[in-house]
Length: 517
Image 1 (cartoon, rainbow, N blue to C red):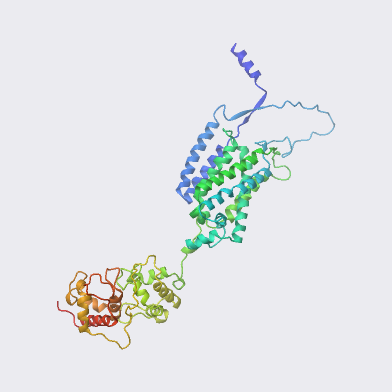
Image 2 (cartoon, rainbow, N blue to C red; image 1 turned 90 degrees about the vertical axis):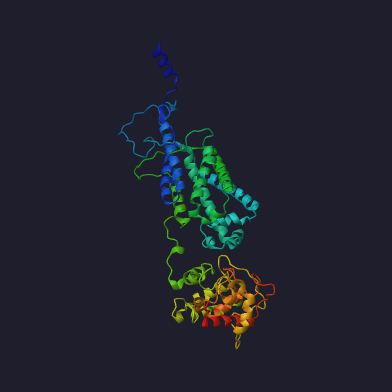
C-alpha cells in the first residue's frame, strides 16, 4: 500500500529537473574575507565587520547546502521536438559557444540599459536629501557639491577652517564640473553593478527591493564611513551621516525599482568558441568602473608617504612655530613663557619692541648675555628670511595661545634707555622700597619672590634684560609690570622713564658690590 502511495505521489508531481538554487552567501563570504584583509592595512573596525560577515556567510552557505534546500524544481517545457527530416551529408557537431552547447545561470538578466537608467534616476534624486541637509544646517547649496569635488580638487583640506568653510559655501566652476563628473560616474557605475547583482540574490521576504533599497545602501554607507578618512578627508569632517544614509536609501529605492521593472533578457551561451573566450559586457563595464574609481579618484591610499612628513633641509623651514621650537623654545619656553630666558609671549613687550630690533637681536645676539647670534651672516644657521619670520612671529604673537593680555599704557617707558640718560642708584633705592621691596625684601634680600641682590642672578642678567623685566614684568611668574599696583602699596604710581633707569642703576650697583647678607 505504501509503495502505491509513493508511486502515486511521484506521478502527481510535474515533470522537471532539479536546478541549483541561486544564493548570495558566497558573495557575503568573499566580502567578509576582503574586509578582514582590509582591516589589517587600515582600521580594526573593518576586520570586525569582516569577521561577522565571514561567520554569517559560512552559516548561510552551509544551511543552503542542506538536503532539500540547495535545489529548486524546474518544470520541463511542454514543447515537443519537431520531426527530424533526414538529409544526406555529415552530422554537424556542436561547437563551444553555439546555441545548445551549454547555458549559464541565471538564464535571464536585466539589460545593461536598466542599470544605466536606474543609476541616472537614482543620481537625480539622491542630491535632494543632500541639498535639504545643506539648507537646514545653514550652508549654501554649493556646500555638498564642493564637498564631493574635494575628492579630486587639491588644496582644500590644507586651508584654515574658517577660510575652508567660506570656500565650501561659494560657487566654483571647477568644483561644479568635478562634482557633476564624479556624481554621474558613481551613479551610473553603481546602477550597472545593481543590474548585474540583483538577479543573483536569494529569494527573501521583500525580494531584491529589500537588498537594493536597504541592505546594499547600508553596506555602502558603512564602507564609506570607514574609508572616508582615506579617500576624502575633507568630507569626513563635515558630512552628516544620518543624511548620508538617507540619500543612499533614496538612490537605492529609485535604482532598484527601475531595474526590477525592466524586462529580463536571456543570456547567450558562453564558451571559448572559435573567436576566443567571451566576457559578459556588463561585468567588464563594472570592472572598468571599479578600476577607474580606485585608481583615479584619490591618491591618498594607505602606504603613500605624506609630503608633510618628508624631511626638509634646515634652510627650507619657513614655519614660525617650527623655527621657534627648534631655535628659541629651549631658553624662552615652548610658547614663549616659563623659560630660563626672558619671556617673549608678552603683550607689553611685543607692543614696545620693534620688528627691526627683533631682527637685530635674533641675527646678531646680545653681547654679554647667553643670547647667541642666529643669522648666517654672523655665523649662525638661519637665513635672513628665517630671521624675519621669527621676528614677525614674535611681534605678532603667533603662538597657539597668547599667555598675557596686559593693557599697554601710552606712557610706557621705552625698552631702550633714552640717549644720554643715566640712572641714579640712590634714587633707585627709594623707588625699590615702594615698587619692589614688598616681594623681594629690603635691599633686595629675602622676600616671598626671591632675592634680587644675588650675585649669580645679576651676573647672568644684563642691564637691558633688567630694564625689560621692570617694564614688562613677568606675567608667567606673577611679577607685575611697571604700572600694576598688584602687591604694592596704596601710594604706588606707574613708574616713569627715569625711575626705571634709577632701578636699573641700583641693580647694576648691587652687581658690582654684592650684598654680604
